[in-house]
Image (cartoon, rainbow, N blue to C red; front, side, top):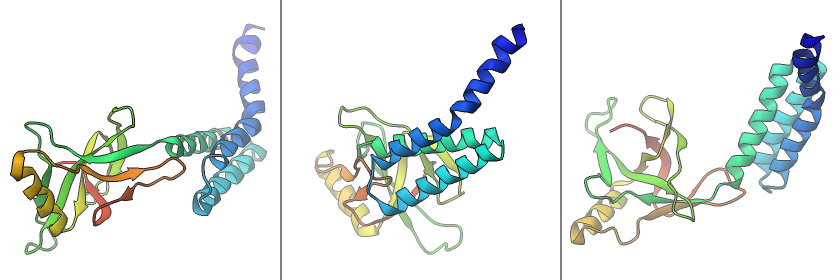
Length: 189
């Protein structure tokens, strides 16, 4: 009786709530964006979650709920990408790639700052090793001219006059950049 009341009952209630949870998480995405690609991705996750419920694959269904909620949370985020310019911290670096020893890759060290001034920790994929890490700052790959312009601005008086290099708006997944960049990044230097 105790097992039924304390363990099995809550498990069955959670399973019964899965279709509602999937739909609710999906609707959270739908009201957060008008981007067709994001809505298509969300619909696929939703449909896979419903199929998982029908096939009694409750772990996969819970995974769909988690994925949809995570997507919805990302869509709600707003932040600016700012070049780091604190004392003792680098604002940019360059690297020589292993595959072409005659080239240089240029990076501005950036961080995501919310409208209320908080720094975010975000999952960033490094172009050097393909690993995704949770970081508060990362190197954003830029062209040489952008790198040199920011470096000259900082050398001038120690302050980068316009440190904002992009912004992520509500309803979008990726930032909109104001500098020439591929969006590629590194997480270690």
